Length: 111
Image (cartoon, rainbow, N blue to C red; front, side, top):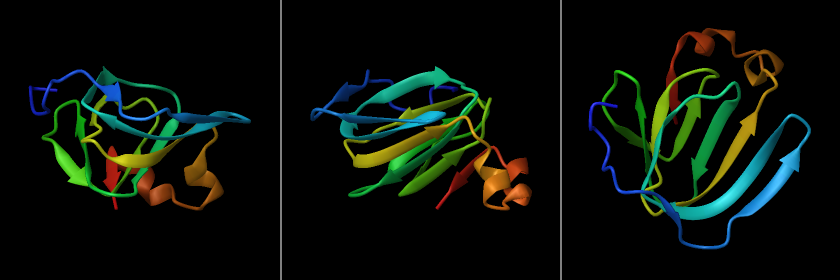
């Protein structure tokens, strides 16, 4: 991640709520610090409810936004920034379900 994110370890600032879904999970919580670089087979959608969060792709600079989408199998690091938010991880192809094939060529989407 080229040291682009503040490398403080992450920690929960509240008791996170986990909701298991068929093929994924939904997480609601408030955290601070950086989740180290990783990849997973799931699509990841993060929506911050109070302040921007940061994300960094493998060869990219840190970017902040109120919402982030990470494609499956993309190495990324996530800066929680003390935000309260929702994170959905789904192994199902949301891009196909919602007719979003053009965005499948993008590593990280910010909204």
